[in-house]
Structure formats: structure tokens, C-alpha cells
Image 1 (cartoon, rainbow, N blue to C red):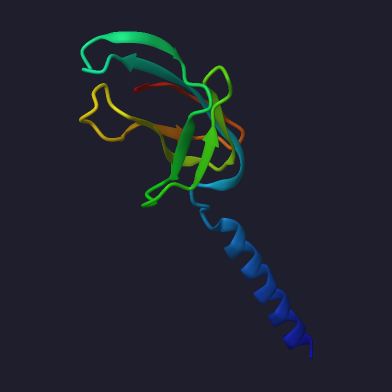
Image 2 (cartoon, one colour):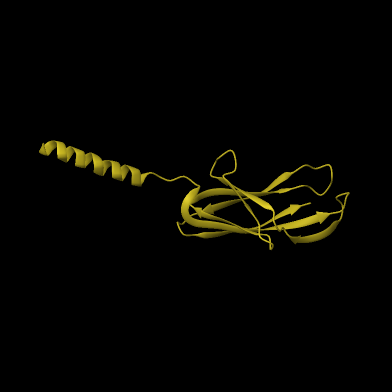
Length: 133
């Protein structure tokens, strides 16, 4: 009976260490965050002349966790074009927003930036992503 209890205790401790030693992948569940800003350049109909520049208010911004094939989350910018992805774990991330292109012949193009979170409670500034319309 004593050997059984000792075996079960050993198994429990081994399982506990195995779970805690696993490397967690990129994504939600952490304490880090990524912030940034969207800036829009608006062109004339022919795509030859910038007719306005301004903060990208209420634009969708996407995040890809690590090497995932599709986006993991989407947020909307505030009136100043600022966005934030919260509760992330350390790892590699891709942030992107869509340009519609400076001319009518161009379809949506993803403008993206790569970001690395290296610490558990880090806030990383991804900078400004410039999109065209």
C-alpha cells in the first residue's frame, strides 16, 4: 500500500512538472500587449495625387499568432487610429490592416508588421501602419 501511494505521488509530481515545463505558444492567455496606430493616405481617383492624410479611425486591425495560417483576433482602432491587442504571451506576431490601394484597379492589400514579445508583461509598440484609400 505504501508503494502504491509513493508511486501515485511520484506520478502526480512528474505530471505537474511536465505541464509547467511545456512552452506555451503565441496567442492569448498572457499579460503582454501590442499597440500601434493606423495612418491613412487618401489618393485621387487616378491614384496619382495624395489628397489627404489622417488617423485611421474605426479601421479593422488583425493579428496572426506565430505561424498560424489565419488571423487569431481582430480589433477596431479608436478615433485617433490607435489599436491594442491585450493578454498575449511571449512570441512572434504579425499585425496587419488592409489598404484598398491608391487607384481603382488595385484590390485590398494587407500592410503588415512583424512584432516580437520577449517578456511576460511587455507592451510592444508596433509603430504606425500606413494604408492607402
